[in-house]
Image (tube, rainbow, N blue to C red; front, side, top):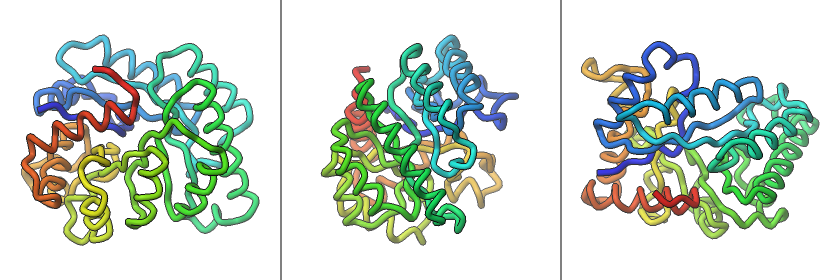
Length: 271
């Protein structure tokens, strides 16, 4: 069974003391590949270093690099950070631009000035993705209609993944139509995540990929069980697969094969 963790922050300090051990554990449970996602320019060096580290180690997942400027940290982003992002895209083998998008979860991000800045950085990064022929990894919270509108207006054609999807069925279908796979996290392990369960059943396994979003989005069993470590890591990806297979009423092996192919397609990879 090959599993692809399509969204991780495995470069952050939470993992500095045992990253290699965790990567080896992840490989043993079937995680053959993962994507390291960027979110602020100040961490790009660390992101690249972790990527190079992982690809130098034996018996760990293959690492892929996706630098980007995350909408949640919009106050931190400066015009020169877009220039640095372009430099990283030029100098390193990046699989995608991400995570990028729109987020109005916080009240302050609904303010016209900050939301306009989010939209500007989103559009600029879509332009870079188009220029360098990369798919994008979308972060969307409480701004699905606006995100879809921008993707259409910008005529973005390279698709990618709508990560940690939190929208409804119609929004998921609209993104699929625009060439995106829908990213499913440990949230699927929560029986109360009814909207997400409806979405995955409505769009089917051919339009899905899985992710841990580590260290965030810890599967429910890892939050409540004394047997499992509560920190979310790529090692937990099989729990996401297991719950998704139950929701879709599909055998795990068959679903894993489909999700692997979907991940390669979304990221335009040959493995």
